[in-house]
Length: 150
Image: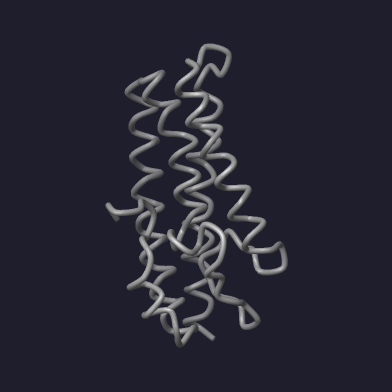
């Protein structure tokens, strides 16, 4: 029971930090001044996120890294190639906006977001490996967040 409580606390902290960074970045970037290329890449990230949500299905979706008892391992749609396409979508949506409108504060928040997502990703993968028998073999056939790189 204690371990489960610690896990939920850790998950809540990670999600809270992630959401805070996303909101801060979206608020601090003047969207009306974003260049076309940044906007096109960010829009691609948004649609990747939508595709990931549709592939995951709402009843299986969670922003928390904890694995529900009735969770299903999804290996279709973008999950065929990328194990964490929603993380990819967040980075693909926000990175071009920061590159287009760099600021010290924005870059610091983006780095905190990146580190949070990487920590959350590693934590989530440990939980998924323990929950799903086939997750280790799925890891060998897919990329974490960036195909052919990571």
